[in-house]
Image (cartoon, rainbow, N blue to C red; front, side, top):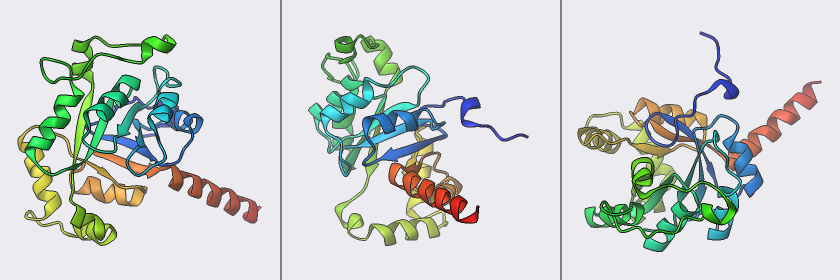
Length: 232
């Protein structure tokens, strides 16, 4: 089979088997350009990245049909932050530091309109003439992804990730998460940051993967340019 180029790809959106790019520092213009390069989704990180609510809106209003899904990792399980990201035009929110079923339910409640949740009405698309969704269409098309993590794990994040990838037993943490999600018909997503780590995550059954970051793409592009110049 021939190689599929970015122009020939069918966008799969966020969730399921998909490839995303994670942005910590990209400008609004760069985030939109990344969305047009073949990724299924682009995530803007409000928790550990540079993005404010204003910058999320700047990116969202520049998105057009046919681009990758816009995803936002909100700073916390906060009703206003979740609703604000979705009102701006995000198709999915990633909610960090979820440590109980009650917190997960709070995230779902903030994400969806009644009767599923309690999200209030106020989509921003109407301000700049962009698209808006009915509550029914929004509930059917948006995604709430929760992050299972702990403060203790973040202290040694590099060692933790490596240990998780190396443990391929059926009783290992990744295997247990994948099995639990599969039993409930849910998709497991993961942050790789580089294609090599993304491959290892997929081998563990994690389908929705951030395969690169804006910073990694910039660094790799610079290295490739220099290699090409020096070899000329």
